[in-house]
Image (tube, rainbow, N blue to C red; front, top):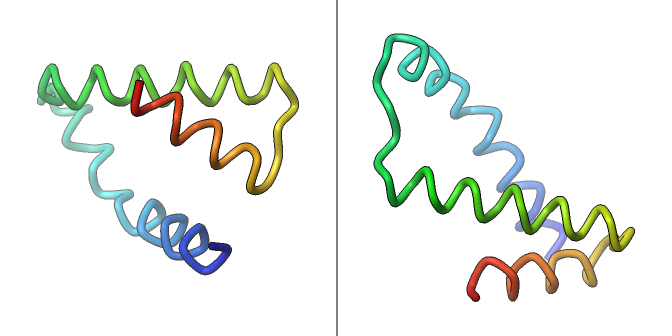
Length: 66
């Protein structure tokens, strides 16, 4: 599980070139934007509940899938 999180973090760092695309005026699709908003809301809820580690991952996964 930890290896998967590390791999996800590396992928996120490598995706740094996506930022300039948004700055140039290209907007993400409505579906992608909605998914990002859902993920942000779920992470905020996990922060509020002070969840960490596996409990946080499980909560966010369930929250996003709802």
